[in-house]
Image (tube, one colour):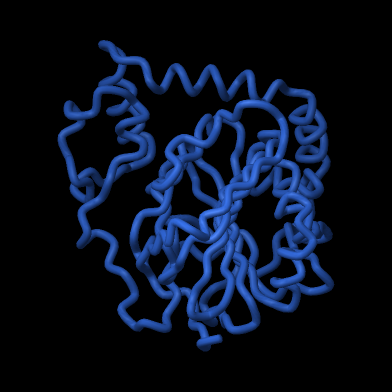
Length: 290
């Protein structure tokens, strides 16, 4: 199923969105969602009602246990709520979300939306050697709506090799902005996590967005908001940080996007198509050992 081209309303809205003070708005949200007080519980209950959140899946179903809205937003789930694809060579969805695009990485570019492509090198913060590894491989872009579960898990066993933080804008990653704003994912702030796996190198790109005032990983803690505007690279070769399939590796605050990059050793499942709704842990493909 192909995404439709942006209409004139989306184009105008996209132009307006470009001039908004993305980081200023997001920092306000960052602080508001961490305030403790009498308004927290009404906010949580209102969100649950508006988005039909099933709190029976939460590790802590009693909303009174959450002292801030952000505590509720990044709540953990019971293990049985998200079973992990059991086949060792099956790739698990890292998040709850909706497939925005998926397919082959051709001529060093990814498909963002109908008529919009962007380069792997730009997405990875200008690292041409790293980008070359994934040319001819596979990608999957998964969008997390505000109502989705917002912890991010490993799609397969992996040894952490590198993390790259790329400062940038914070455009919305809703489907209309993806259609309207060229190279959006390569312009937004993002965290690139590179793993060594049985299928070869795999990258998980955690893309920030408006109101996504923080991105965290389990090994580095809070990465954004950033200090400074320079690309930073952290090497983890000596630490031997191994993460198992289904293990938590990070989390978003508010909705955002995860982009998976893999080599030609990966093949996506037939059901992995644009618009497909996913839950964390379900099988989305298989790999051949490298």
